[in-house]
Structure formats: C-alpha cells, structure tokens
Image (cartoon, rainbow, N blue to C red; front, side, top):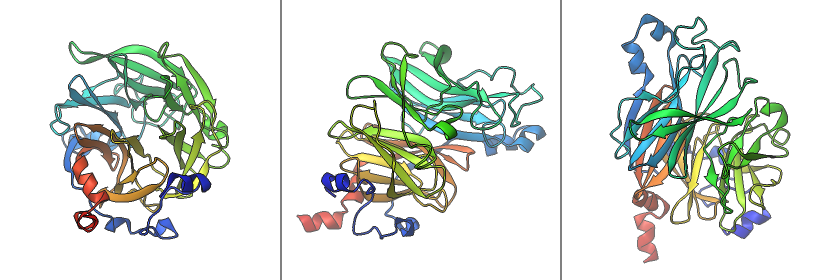
Length: 388
C-alpha cells in the first residue's frame, strides 16, 4: 500500500486482499505461522510448587519483559513479585544469555522496595501503605547499560510518589548499582530511543495520566534526568491512551501508537512532524487490538515489525505484523498462542528477532525467529516462483 494512501486516510493501518472490511473478523487462529525456537526463562508456577505454603497461596507474577544485547550477551529483565500483579514487595529480576536461548538462573536487579519486603505484613497486598518496583527496560547510553524501574505505592495505577529510577550495570560482577531518579511522576513504556536529531525520547505516564493524558519525554543527552515533557493532546479525550510506542518514519516524522483503555478494540495513532515536540491528535486506526501492550521496531533493512495481540476478544495469539513504510501493515503472521500470551518486547540481532513475552503473567518466555523465515511469510515460495 503506497504511503500516500495512508497520508490521505489517517485511519488506515492494515490493508491487503486478505483483510475483511471489519478487521475484527480476521481469522487470527489461521494466520500464517512463523517458525521459531522457544524457551521458558522463569516460571513462578514452578517456583510455587517448591516454595512455602504462603508462597503458594500468594502465587506470583512474571511480567513486563524487556530485552537488550550488550557486552556480547543478551539481557532480560521483568517484574517479579507476589500475586498477580504489581503488589507490595514486587521487585525486578534479570537473567543473561550468550544466544538468547540458554539463560542463567534469575537474579534480583532492584533491591526490595523500602519497607515492603517479605518481612512486611503488607507484602503481597494492594495498598498505598506499601511500595513496588515495575520493570521498565534497558537503556544503552554512552557505552553503559542502565536498567529502568518505576517505584510507587501498590494500591493502583499509579501512586503519587511515582518515579522512574535507573540502575547502572557494574560489568565487573554483573551487579546493579542505583544511578538516581530519571524523572519524577513518570513511568515509561519502553526505554529511550534516539531521535533523528540525536536527543532521546520515551513515553511518560504521570500518576494521574487517566485524567491528564500521556506525554513524551525528550532529552536525556546532557544527563539522565534532563527532559522536556510534551503532552499528547487528545490522549485522554479521543481515547484513554495506554502504553505508547513510537518509531521514526522514512521521511523523519514520528508515528506513535496507543492502546485504548476504553476498549474500542483498535490501536490509535498520532503523528509528530517536528521530532516529538508537538503531536497531532490521535486517530483511531483499523488495526485490531486486544487492549494489550505491544512492541515494534524498524529493522536494519528498513521494514517495520509490530508484535501484538491483534485479536480483540482475547490475548491469544501473539502475532507479528510487517510494514514497509511504518504506516500501513500488509502482512500479519502467528507467533505463539493457544493460551494467554502477552506483553512482548522485540529486538533484532544477528539475523534474528528475539521476542520476550509473558504467559498468563506467570512465565517469562523468549522466541528466536530467523529473519529469513519472516521473509518467507511475507513472500511465500509459491509467490516467488510466480514472480520468477
């Protein structure tokens, strides 16, 4: 689909002869399959079977998965705590891997939230009298690896003390040292990425974002705590914006996607013509969504991929969608499903995509997908034969 068509129709995000007029009627279970290698890195269900009666009663959460490749190995972090989800005492865990498939045993990245560890009578509860960390991703900055985690009260989403903290990797012993607060009254969705002008940008939700809408933070170059906050007007009126994601289009504009907390079942999109300093009001697209977190990136070859739960009825399956221009998706394929799977994060490395996701909010899992296999889905052998 030519880019100029998407310019004329800002709601168009999914197009092709296989797409019905109502994209909610796509047969998601019959999407073409993408081959992958699969591994479970952490499973709180297995941990509970070997824990105390108290651990089993409380259950546990593994969610908010983030990947990075740094220092010749893969890094994976996630929220790890009692109960499902984000309760008092939750902290962030991590593991490493040489290849994305063989992972170390998990270790703790953050300390216990102040006064909220397992010895606290509030541990595992939802209350504003206790605190929790939430995993927020790896930031590779000036040759260092920083890990981001929010800290706030565990009553709801989010508490008034909300702040985004950084932890710096000490490569000598692979320990994590506090590096300070990145931004007060802020939780990001993905770690900062470079803008075309060299500044960094990431999304920001304040503790009262449902009333005031979402922002983007621009800066981070002079210091990790130097940011300008830019509001997305209409993000609390046209929709109830959640968990934004953005990328740079071929012409230098930025496109941001939002899940809709009002459960329209579609993604919304906003465009910035000036490097994130201003945003046009979000528009509902025709791309279906289960109201779940999604992750995307621009590949080294210039294409764009989006990993999401497109079935508006349930978080099953996890699918990958491909676009040539960052605006209109022409291919959608099945990654994993037949169960509750969500909260992906995708990175590209060494001719592969690595996709971390959660199973039922209790497992941390990784898929390794060859880009060559993704190419076969976009351009099947039979189709290539016809073109030849």
